[in-house]
Length: 67
Image 1 (tube, rainbow, N blue to C red):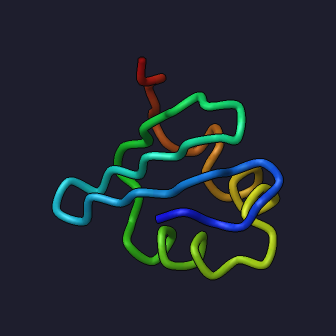
Image 2: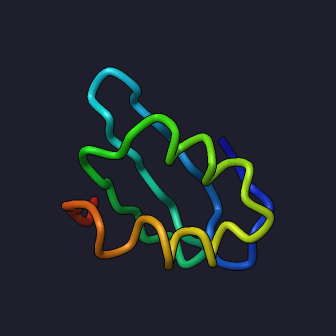
Image 3: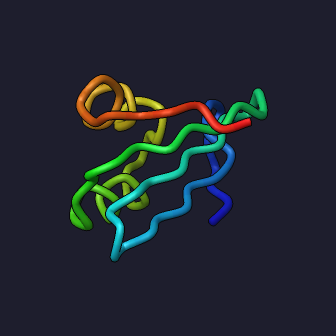
């Protein structure tokens, strides 16, 4: 899903696997594992996607950069 943000371009969530894929405006893509559905929902609804990402997702879940 494309989002309006100065830092984040798109968010994709795989509910069964609890994987959150984040695409940044730079084009870099990361996948975060073990993200609960309620965190994904709150991320999508957050007024500031970048701030929410920094405080609630970054460094809280295992991640990998996608090529």
